[in-house]
Length: 267
Image (tube, rainbow, N blue to C red; front, top):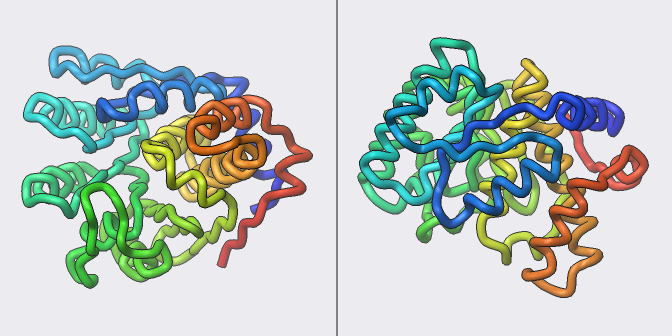
């Protein structure tokens, strides 16, 4: 994927300002909303079971994040995902900490059966979702498995579930089961800020809203997020200032910067 391909999709997000319905966790709600605004999308955090189905129908994409689960939220996730599939709204699953408890694994499995267009997780989360791969060694929401260690599992999961699987880490991988994109952008400081993986998932939702080709949309979204992270790390003194700098980098990112920094290969 060329810098121009990525830029064209970013411009589409900025011009169309798609409405992204997020059912997400309490820790990252503000980060996620601000990342979507910075990239050019419009965020909504709608969790109530009484309205999620109606809100999905007026949204351009749905993002489901299981980071801070509770019973009503699980019900809302299932209702929203089912409605999204019925009305043709693309949706993204972020299985945060899926390996931590049996409850999380059961919830993630039930959501997986509802057919997400994209799954985005770290190495351990993707390994946990793939029952025929070695079990991921997660610690809460942290990954103890590198992204490349989960690539075979991701390809299997993508093929079996007919979806796109993205693994984020030092190198990000995106696969549809056959093709594999490697994204060598980002910065180690990003791992010191909570919720940046969740923000990346939300940005995938924004790109998916303007591009029906889920593989290309996911690659472009993670490329933009990674390049913005590199730019932000160059401005930041540490994790605190990185959070603010990342929003500015997403907002001001231009084609020349993508041309200079983008490191994506597809095989």
